[in-house]
Image (cartoon, rainbow, N blue to C red; front, side, top):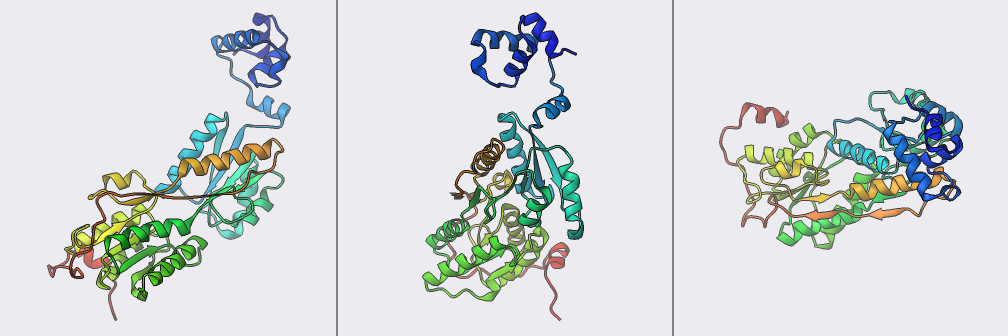
Length: 352
């Protein structure tokens, strides 16, 4: 394996010069021709840096940790993938921590173990881990919080705008009975979305019935179980907290004998690949993954360089109109009275 000494000997420069060039440090101390020659030799000799030695020397590993609750959720997988690409562009590597299987009482111990992975900084994208707890447990390393209203968060989504955009689209089509498959009411994000939902309907002279709202607790199975209740309440459109809920809602509507979008319109959020393979293709709100992740990566790099974190940004969704939304039918749709399938029957809660 080639060493810095091998490269320096062939390039006829000092070992320190080779180190400076390959680490892009103090570029004014050597000429462009020398830098080009050293990099060419390093490539030809297939030089691989000793990461452990570099970390001990520079006190930097070029590794950024990312905490997530789990990987089963498609939007989380998209976030992780986008972070991996962004950090790679900046010459950094990603270390992933999956904290969803741990008990809350063990969170601090888990974070201490995670910190032992020699990371320069950590980004907390686990909404179930309190931001202050993570910051305290990982001190003195810099910690950023992903997409939450917290001083350590460099960018978050404008969920008021997101809900206004979705509701504006459905109201503009003529819908007046709009159901909402939302996240748990203890979560600040659904709280904002639900409040905005009420405000917009009231602005149009509509008082939503309690039966129009359904708390999924972020479980896709619950979205499928609760959709029949929204349909039974006469909703001609359903706003879903994410694309996965929307695809489940489409399936339930069809089993109930309803056409999408002729009888009921369904709109999602995130614009994940599943939105394009849905039948019909899903009208949804495109999450600004790249912009969100770049803001967090830029903020982390600034902190690692001893600079202040850039001002926090409020990012917006973009409405993508496809085939799952249309004007409502002349009358409130009702499910056909065909005998439901055994699977569908199991999804409808029994009344006692």
